[in-house]
Amino acid sequence: MEITLESIQQLKKEKNAVILAHNYTLPEVQDAADYVGDSLGLSRKAAETEAEIIVFCGVSFMGETAKILNPDKKVLIPEPRAGCSMASMCTASQVRELKKHYPDAAVVAYVNTTADVKAEADICCTSSNSVKATSSLEEKDIIFVPDMNLAAYTARKLPEKNIIPFHGYCSAHHGITAWQIEDLKMLHPGADIVSHPECASEVLDISDYIGSTEKMIDHVRESSKSEFIIATEVGMLYRLAKARPDSRFYFPPNALCQTMKMTDLRLIYRALTEGKAEVVLDPEISRRARIPVERMLSLR
Image 1 (cartoon, rainbow, N blue to C red):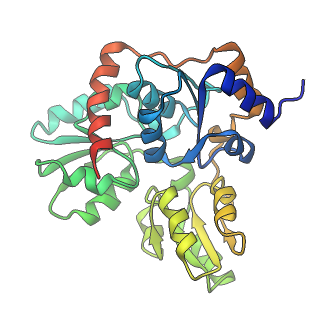
Image 2 (image 1 turned 90 degrees about the vertical axis):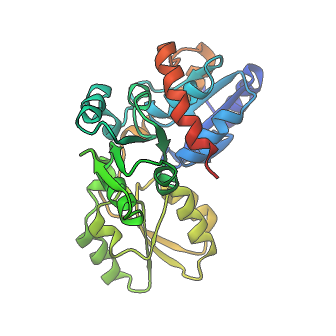
């Protein structure tokens, strides 16, 4: 049987399901989704949906976040093996050890973490609101997990805080180097350098704009430039090209997240048909994790 966008849309209606997809997923998956966005936007949509079933196309922590916000709904992740290298670097026990070493510190957990880690946090954040989330805490000392690059970016913006970083990173973003960006700039001297804050500081230092994937799209849409060097995962090309079909975009060749590409139309159709690949969380972990996630979503 040929699986098409039309067949998925029909099945979605029959099941009263909503399909959410991250900006890094395959173009065909983005076309099938009801909403495509960054982690913050996806979290908000997951919290607001009235659908009975949430099909989350991305990586595992995203499905967990949707389940945390919707404990009574069925949340499906079409490819359960689609993990996040950054999320796997940090465990709840490691966070508890840090809290013992810094008993007066608050914990900010990037949304790119497991439910167990979120349960140990005071507030969660995304790349678009890490500064706002961190500044909302009264404590001066802040344990920031797991992304050391986002921690460094946040520390720059908040010199009044003592940011204690965990040494995790996104493999796709951390692998982007300043010399790669400089080489692209030599080839395209008129291009704006637009970077994600998960990149290393030396990349951010030479950037014209820094922001989450959704903010990148807004920047490109409003820019007077027509060429852009994009320091983030290459899946962003699809949405950027749709936002500015008159423009050219250049990516570092190694900026690829394999697990974001694991979900395809076949897996979405199978998830909707069989109802398997359901996200299941420990109720107590889910309850505790919901508090910092909701604190993040309350930020305006």
